[in-house]
Amino acid sequence: MKNIKNQHKDLMDLLDQVPGVKEHMEKFEVQMAQQILERRIELGLTQAQLVRIIQQQGERITQATISKVESGDSAVGADTYNKILHALGGAAHIEIEFGELPKSAQLALAYA
Image (cartoon, rainbow, N blue to C red; front, side, top):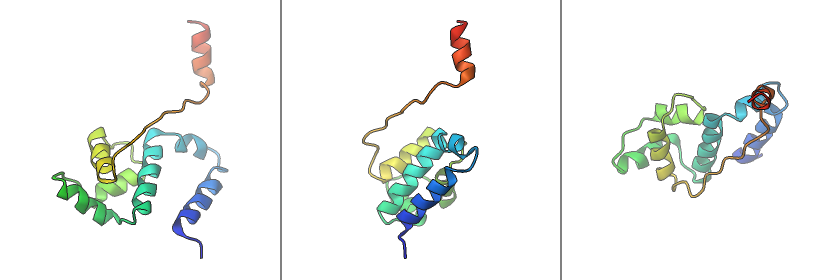
């Protein structure tokens, strides 16, 4: 039986083939969700255990909030990300890799 990491990767590979999914997966909140979920699983934590760790650090958060973050909810604020990232070991490095400009932006630059 495949482990959960391999199942997740297989699912992500399959989703990449669906129209519109690539654009969705490039959204900030979706990329953060993916990294947070992967780190939590890597550490062997449940959402409830992560909530307890954050609460032990003196912060307030609910399991529902963790679920929203891991599902890529766009209404998540920086403070919530900071609480979760700190509990998962901190963000040692965050890098943004820009893709090609959309055609509309290229046209706007051409006429600027």
